[in-house]
Image 1: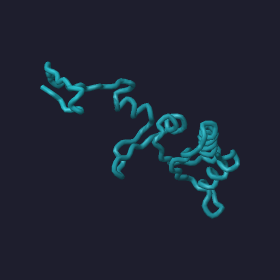
Image 2 (image 1 turned 90 degrees about the vertical axis):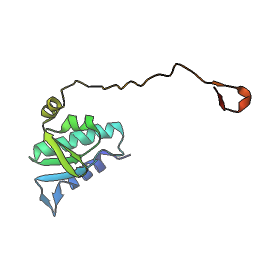
Image 3 (image 1 turned 180 degrees about the horizontal axis):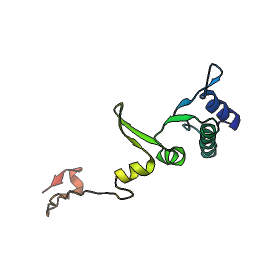
Image 4 (image 1 turned 180 degrees about the vertical axis):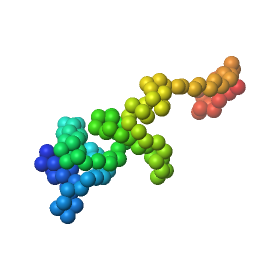
Length: 126
């Protein structure tokens, strides 16, 4: 487990290049392998660094709840290409809001059944 010092050094280290402050930082799965309390602290730290230093943080993550918590804009990539981007509310509206569409395809059900003879070692009988 990482302590807060290591988390701070990791996040801060990603925001400096040659001792100069960057305007953009790239973070790849910054909360990977961190305990739940550490995840909260890391997200708070990333958010704080972005605000205090007026930085853009580009973060890749599969954890959508974390993205929703700290990101103002989101880009969705598929196969190395940006397929859509916008604020979370814009993307939510584009995707239908909180609505979920479920398509069900029904197959015909066979009315017959097969019985297994316990002595047949799993072979089915008609």
